[in-house]
Image 1 (cartoon, rainbow, N blue to C red):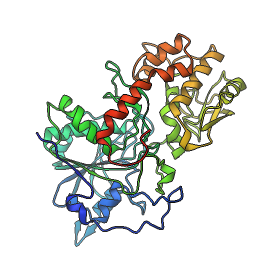
Image 2 (image 1 turned 120 degrees about the vertical axis):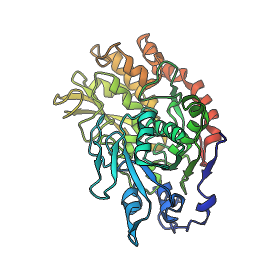
Image 3 (image 1 turned 60 degrees about the vertical axis):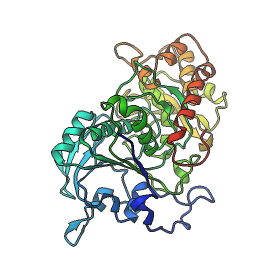
Image 4 (image 1 turned 60 degrees about the horizontal axis):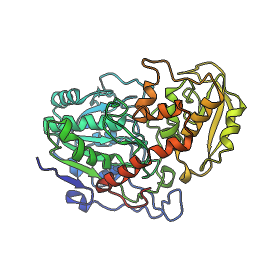
Length: 430
């Protein structure tokens, strides 16, 4: 089936009224405030969804500039009828309203505010999504979730499974685009065959540098024909951002940050997450259960030497402060840990995966207690997070951080070239 990709600014959206954002400056001088796809569609009075039975995949990040959730705005009644006929909402990991912790979800329930049925879609595969679409009568699926730009952040795979389901039911798929908070730069290793999982279902690199709208286009063109019985979506529509360039980070957009998950409290967290999330595969605390997850990293056996060794490396964009903390959940809960706080000194120079690689290499060199988290086989989780066994085997063989990082550069370059045809926004790509 021939693919049709409709972008904002075409068709019905061409007449969307412009919102005066000239005076709303973003974080850096000369940048206008970014408008999300949701804002663009709302400014056009949701016309692209008129007359359709709509299912929405979203979480607390799906907000408009007045901080209302898009589902609440869609359900608002005019002359006794809702602005959009939302027949179902599908909640990902952490839930639609965001009440669940990591790995958790909200049960099927009627949303008390809107009266709309909300289905638990955490971990849902295409078969379950297709069943939910059929049960609720969905004709158009709307995806609106703020991603953080890492392959192992699960929302993009929720979108992927939902897209496969849409090919099976004939539903239209609409992505309300949001900025990649860590910018459009591609970094890190490629996921290899044999290492797919719930934190990486297809071959993309660790820090993909794409928006969810751009990823949707790539998924539709390259992976849906393989996983959806040779089909692509009947119709994919990406409602594009306005006033966003690839070199912009979230703090440059002027948008309000809403935590995409309980342990992603700030844009700084998102900047470090593509790298420091690798500590989830170790016996270190990655800072869950502290006020600075993925910034505070440590273990009960770490002392001042780790911070000193890392600070001496002069890694661009970050400093390392000796720190002590006691997580109240997850690994090392209620145990005093020594370690570091990764302090961002220049957000535009941060390369989180490179920094984390140095951190792991030095931790293993300094502390014999360093180990992969308990699992069978040992080290499997670091393989899934990095996309192959290369990181682990090079580390075990005594490779330097520089050697490990250099090993995946050809993959990053190949990904940068491959994704180019799907990019919707201008600016620096690397």
